[in-house]
Length: 322
Image (tube, rainbow, N blue to C red; front, side, top):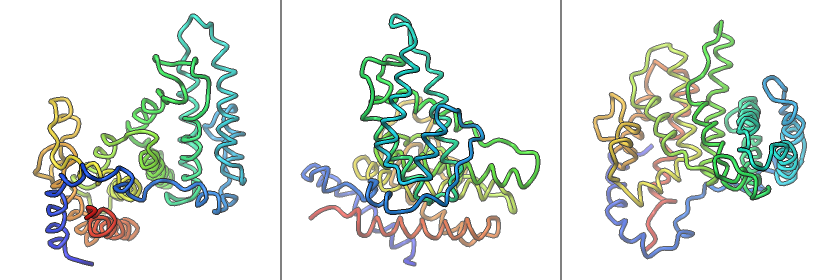
């Protein structure tokens, strides 16, 4: 692996030439992070048996067919939108539409994502494609919070933020291990949503990266492994988009509220927000985590992999066009 010094020397050189971006088309700059329907559909999802658990009856049949069969995300989105339209339209046209149905719908989707066998399972890609197809569905007259329920996806962001209150505390170690694994898979799903341009979760990404890479790790702590793994899935799946934001605005000006929300953790001595310096710190910190005894081999391997990805993006895929 190349030294951090080499990487640190490279990125500022890229960032100092951001003026060139104004002459390039957005397509030419786009990182390779968009989901491919063909890629997702050529991977079998039949090994993933969805259990109902906390999933409502309204959603379970649709989600089960989606992740366990070769059903296309577009077809599942048609079914989900039709079912939602039927239920939501029961409200009087003059009354505000109850947002409870949509909160439950998104919670059902999160529960399905958490049951995926791993954070890199293709079923998560399929669920993201399902959400993207939903954004193309529905009756524009049906609104929640003055926004269209599918095209604008108004409740999705609120449901995601609700989920970020933190993983539950289980009664025993085995249950806590399952809770921690589900937490990482949920964030792998959320990061994919951002990568697919379904929703902007930059703030949430920074929170998870702060927790995983800007805090001291406690030796032998299950929470330490969980936080490191969560940070790595955000970089793996949404990292190119975060990097692109840095290329466009290496050191953004923030208001007081954003400074508070996007503040740094104790290990990072720089300022708040998404910046080139903070990105470099995460890369350095991942290299450090890979050598630490405080985390498991799984977390170390993930740190090594993602640190290398960050180098590759800086050296190849994210180069400024000449």
